[in-house]
Image (cartoon, rainbow, N blue to C red; front, side, top):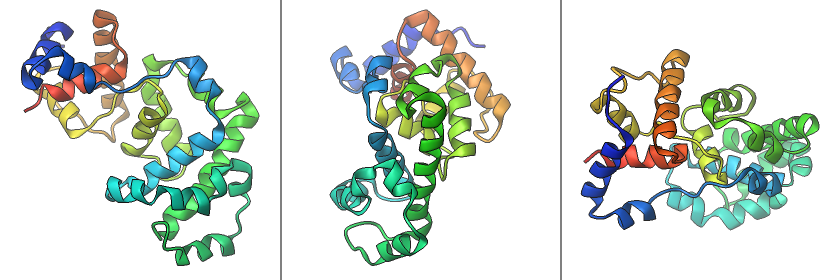
Length: 225
């Protein structure tokens, strides 16, 4: 592994953005385990759905239509959505207040069922992700990909970031930074070995800095111009 320190990375990010305050303003919010546990499972399902619909689509359009999604899915109550019939899902294709994509609409029901299953075993989805160690966050990504619906790629990590779970994200800029600073020679997001190697890089940088993974991730991205 290269001997680039987090302090050096932060200095580059500050130089690129003009000030430490400018960098700080761009750091993502990270919730405490208590805050994650206090978040209702309806909000976790809502953010899963938002992530699924944003994938490959304009985030601004999805967010503008979000009140329509909240209404169409009855506030994203997991128990209610998990029991939507095929006919009810198909009927949503006539609802112009949302994005009419049947596979993504169906994924909301599938993720409601997944969320309920997690809650049965852990008390709530919030308790489940609050207890998951950030030092192995990649395994949580893989869990979401395997057991959730359409939560692979960066959709799962972005969902975690949006709900406040501490995670890094392998965006194009973060990947470029990891390679440019010689932490990695190459990164294949489909390779479990590569993902675990990246996890170790982030764990090492966290031990150096005391920063959350999400902040380290953003700092790395800000070193890319």
